[in-house]
Length: 132
Image (cartoon, rainbow, N blue to C red):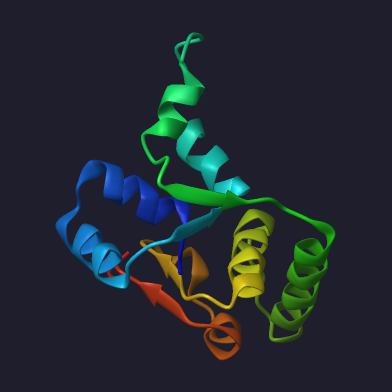
């Protein structure tokens, strides 16, 4: 299984070659967080009449995992460790990382939001656009 951050889903939808190739090599099933579903949809809204169901169907092959209490607790533990090292991550990114960690799958991202030593120590994170 492959766990995709919203940045990867967006790049897949836009056809960014390096991202598409890597994700396709990893193979299905594709997982994501329900927070990532919102982030992708949020990037498309604004007209007042956006068909959010149609937007979701554009990446319907990606199964969303719901946020639950165990994920929230794990995100809290991770933030605690980060803060002990003088770092801090955005809550939504920690919740996404904790959801990925709960599956044991590699988290694939396409931005610098997840570049911390703690995440590298705790889980497999691959940044497909490390130049960000």
